Length: 339
Ligand code: KG4
Ligand code: ZN
Image (cartoon, rainbow, N blue to C red; front, side, top):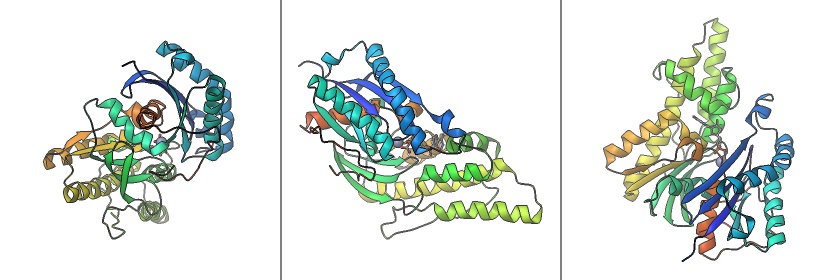
């Protein structure tokens, strides 16, 4: 059988990315233009700027990705593009680009769910990984505990009631003056802090026991900072960062391992930007080892937004016969498992 080559395109937030994936599992190229420096100035992603920068960069990023994979458009079997969820103006750039290439060349088009992409990053990192497995997706916009029953078949066991885990990292980082993006900065500064210095709450919400809530934790950190200020006490940023991070890690690991036990999962994976957090990775490694469960985690570059994961997810959709029409549109609130 001849190889199947997929061009992945990702523009849902602040990374303009393209990648070429061979047979679903092999990365031939993974080109990422990160706009983070632009948005740092404003303390967060500015949607209008993100869309404009995607337009500036998308052609260059795709050309670079094809060149470094040594692949021409004529070699491609499909074009996979993130069509949701995400920022509508940002998504539209990738979707319009993918449709234009598909229309101009006749190459099939496959719309991909961004979260499905994050989960599939694990297939790129671990060639031996096959469903079923359980996966925690923790990103700037999502916190989902997902039962991956088969390729493209997902059951959401738990989700956040309010802030996503990454959003909480970003907001707390801003409150303690670390700037954007907060996750990597809290990860780093907490190395010098004591995770037990301040006790922040670990919320239990929902009936399933697998849902999450981070807004109470964020408020507790803000209240702590305010009360220190009012009492004229000095704030130890590293202790606040480490204690906050520990509370997030405890809840993410606690709920996930409860689900692993209840469902008898044999394999557990993490995905999304927050999955590149060193403390979270170490905590899951220990928890899975103690439970005798196989643990899978993509390298940090495949945790944060990239198009390799979109190419991989697109491959599994493509071989199942999924095709999108030229009327494919950006769907900012697309739910996992929906088309
Ligand atoms: O998956 P991603 O790149 O974009 C979304 O789909 O949202 O995730 C970005 C999020 C941001 O909130 C960022 O602060 C967080 O991931 N993040 C981290 C780390 N690296 C990125 N959070 C905690 N620790 C990190 N090392
Ligand atoms: Zn993402």
